[in-house]
Image (cartoon, rainbow, N blue to C red):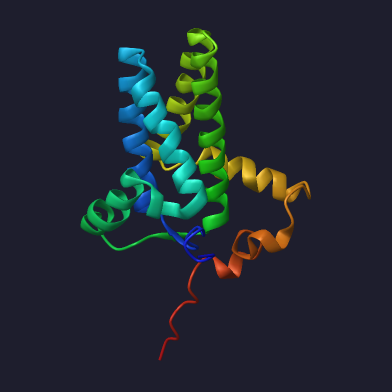
Length: 165
């Protein structure tokens, strides 16, 4: 059961960017329709991905198993910063659902707008704002170094070059 509630490490960056593109689409639908239904779907997806990676997220599952393999070879990146980023998304969307439920739709749409900016950066520019924040928090000592060894040790980020003859 503990392995079910885990986050992949490493993560295929192509799958993460595909998920972000799906979040952009669903976030845009949420803002255009100003409906709580796509907002609730967004929030549930983020919570599912935080709890168990793509296992509890249809978007995550499709991105990892269907779309990303068709985009080319996997580009592996550390998992902990991606999980942290999903946690920020879960927080923003959960707060937006709460704001909507408390009859503060403007607050909800502003939070979705912020999410849309971050997801667009990830999907279209390959810049993960949550990962960037994770790195800053780790450098400040607020996230222990052992949470993401690959984030601290640059030699773990890339495979060693092949020996030349």
